[in-house]
Image 1: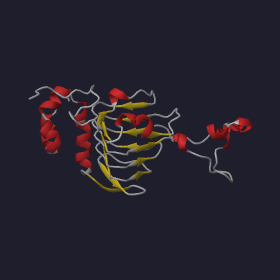
Image 2: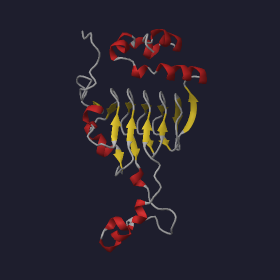
Image 3: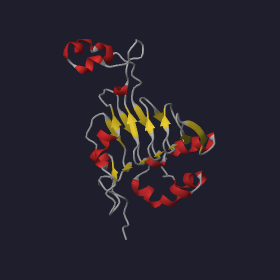
Image 4: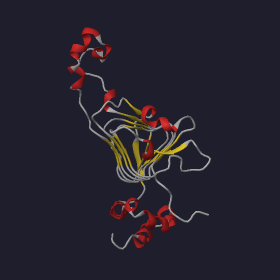
Amino acid sequence: MPTGPADPTVLHPMPGQPRVVLLRPMITSPLIEVGEFTYYDDPDDPTAFETRNVLYHYGPEKLIIGKFCALGTGVRFIMNGANHRMDGPSTFPFPTMGGSWSQHFDLLTDLPNRGDTVVGNDVWFGYGTTVLPGIRIGHGAIIGAGAVVTGDVPDYGIVGGNPARLIRTRYDDADIARLLALAWWNWPVEHLTDHIRIVMSGTVAELEAAAPASL
């Protein structure tokens, strides 16, 4: 029986389950940053995450995902390149069709940019969720299956629906502040390994008691 911590550098962390991949070891785009142990589950081809699940990503905005996030099948991040002009009679992107139309490319490059899409640590994305450009999702949040996230999600918030609405928070404000101060996702992996059961099923007070002495 293994006694050491899990390895954040392996592509397939679950033996016999090729549908699950850790994203950090396989990301190649400089526009995508993913923390350790964040995984994606897809029965078709999870290794195609960069092209199938991060859409219209022409830059310069980034997709930043924290550590220990769980991404269900079909999660999609829509990036800023999906935007079209809406201030004139037509939304059609004529300059992208080439020919002499391309001389008007400035009509696309000056579109509003909401900036980076940023996902905190320990976020759980349900099946088939969609995140729009420039969204901030807080630590410990839960995104319900099929949700379309059009606005920022608070730390430890649970959202669902289309457009996604805040259903409730997992803890009250005081406990959320305590959890953010503990930031267990930044604990040394050896220390975290010793306290997995508390991290998964303990109370906030037990988590505080288990925190590294240097915290």
